[in-house]
Length: 460
Ligand SMILES: Cc1cc2nc3c(=O)[nH]c(=O)nc-3n(C[C@H](O)[C@H](O)[C@H](O)COP(=O)(O)OP(=O)(O)OC[C@H]3O[C@@H](n4cnc5c(N)ncnc54)[C@H](O)[C@@H]3O)c2cc1C
Image 1 (cartoon, rainbow, N blue to C red):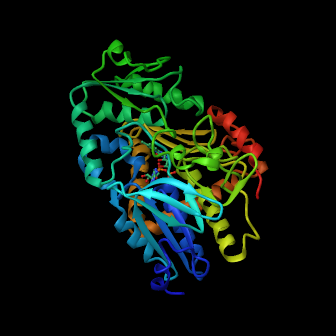
Image 2: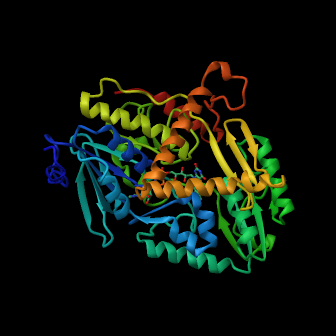
Image 3: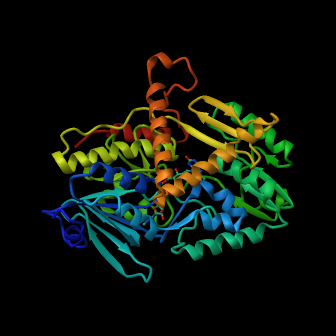
């Protein structure tokens, strides 16, 4: 059973009583792909079968979406077909076989009949057995930021094109003063071809939750660049007309309760693993699905879709850190019955890079430490540009996914550096510095839901 051929024959509806273990990962975006890459690295000797299920046929580098809203060339560059990514993952180890299925997860069954049910594009329902299941279905977002049912690359690109054309020459109100709203409003103000851009936010600050200096920098940029910020404005049906805008872009944050989300595929007993407050999946410190009385030992969740006891920010660096723990734990379960499972750290660092427009302005945040872009400093503004730095990381990410060796090495070094910084700033002697990693209980918006997860936090 050591060859890929042998393993592939085991996939499908057969339960793997013998032979390679079968890990099914639902959602092939950052969380799913980080996890798979780490699993492949760890299983250099043990055979393993990984099956991805994703509703879409393509990966979209969502972090680069503001650019895709403005430029068709950029939009097609940040979308990669999964066939290309899977071929690349498959070539990484002779022992690990990776396959991809396009379909929408509709039901998870646990406790003896470990199966998932999914539907394919023509509505046909299929089943797949798993030894270990990882739910990494992320979040929903209003269109055009995320397209719920864009199964194919062409449909997605067409959706972005329609939106791009609908805002040209119009006045546009971006709703939501978080990092996405700020980035999208600022890029549209600079290069979206709009007549006027406004930004509406419920509170009295932009980038709420981040250190106040971020709000001050964003507010100043918006004023200097003609973006009208409407503070204390809760968006309602008539807000667009009252404030005098033609079009609206909704950036009010991640959503979890829409169709296709966890509440639609976790039913029966498994529905007790849902947070009543946010609709996310509750997991324990080992990222196992958990209820007040029970943890599911072979069902895990990773990424935006779950709430963990660490209460980490929903962004890429935390996903990278947590995927290391989950891959190590899955490896331990497969190779030595889970004798050395590691809980995730209590505190996960907060790392943000938020650009204001494309000319260098923005903020870089590491916990409480904030560094501003150098857009006001001659010469330096061309070198220290938040947008250029973000773009560079985006290209490296895409290059790595396509299997380019150079990008793979640079990304590896970047994550090693990040892990080292994380370790360093966890030390007690660093406590006086703003970059100290002490992020316990800080995300206030989900505080109640997190309290609940902590109550359940046991290994069973
Ligand atoms: C516009 C925007 C900009 C961002 N910029 C940044 C940034 O600059 N830096 C940063 O750190 N973070 C950024 N984020 C956050 C970051 O993108 C997320 O934290 C990250 O994408 C989460 O990854 P994930 O794999 O958990 O989920 P997602 O990226 O949401 O992916 C979920 C996957 O699951 C699939 N899926 C969903 N439901 C089902 C189902 N029922 N069946 C089958 N498949 C399903 C989807 O098709 C998708 O492929 C940004 C987010 C947005 C929306």
